[in-house]
Image 1: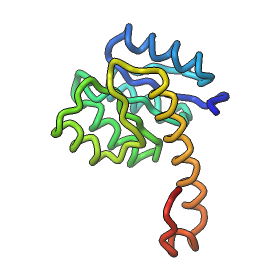
Image 2: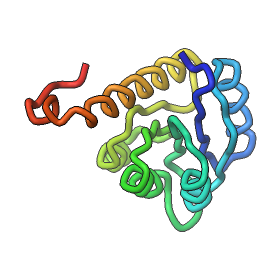
Image 3: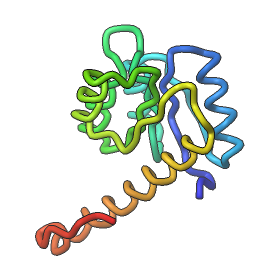
Length: 144
């Protein structure tokens, strides 16, 4: 998996963003853009198609990663995987409200990142196929 799938990195720390980009490219993903703020992430995601967004929760500026993710979910229905150094109860509760497809803790372990991305992309694909089948949705079919 991963061949030519595009991932948007949203991370306000340049060194971390560069490291994430090189890790993702080694895994076979394309990273055509890096956004350094929530507003920049919205602008980039509105003009370029991405299969997934890796979103840092602790963005600086007018909106944090959770707020940006909620807007992206509402407008574009793109899967979001949060990346954060904070796993306290309040942060996790706020993050869950944005309905993420995954949650990766910093420092990032490449195997955990790969597995989380693959699961998120698979879930997104299944949900997209199910949304095209009203009979399955009406029957309350559970996602695998």
